Image 1 (spheres, rainbow, N blue to C red):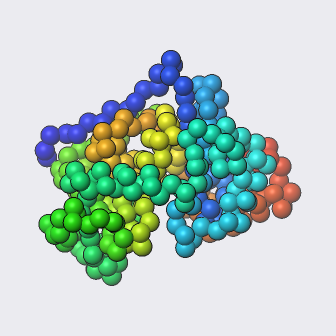
Image 2 (image 1 turned 90 degrees about the horizontal axis):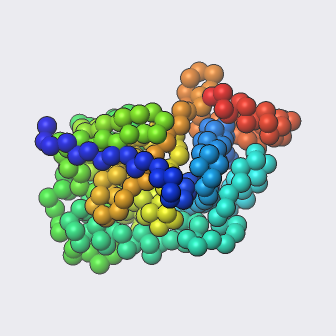
Length: 292
């Protein structure tokens, strides 16, 4: 193993303002797992007498729907989650919908491209599915490296038409201290490989967009589910490449169904909207979400 890359947790500075965020994606109705995470984020912001930002993560034009945006705002208010800045109000770091923040992502893409952290990838999903690294338990299989030594990314003026991957430092350890789960360690090239930061359909990928937005919106702590721990390792590499200081991270335990599976938006019976229609009160939903 090469020299460890230790990215230490940013400890909360009591003299600095706390800024947290909730970042739902309008691809379906919010469920109990979302409720648990967002209630935790609200309580963390209250604990540190800070502010809470709501960001509408509507990056994917094929999956995000306007009616889900309205539903998530309504369900969150019903649940008792309030926020200080968001798409429904003014704030100093808007716009607060990712579909309106393309220029921010492009600026970061250009900076990473010019510094040599990115390369264009033409591999199809079929090729990746057939690679020795697939299937993988993560949402993104370890990339086999076919396009790594290919075309110089600086020849591209715009990112459209290919996937753009971040070149990870193979063999280096990314370590950080999670505010809830404690020390975390991941090995680049083994636990995750070169990952996509810009999609061939000309949309910024999640990993890049959330780093750009959390930095621009001055987020001091990111509260989200523990299923995103590996994404945090990836994102901390982006922070380092952009020479930005990362926030601290608090990864919540996941809410599971009766079989022990993590809740997803396909679990309609556990959606906040369905529970509301069934006669549940906000307090009952909050208690069920907090109990996991």
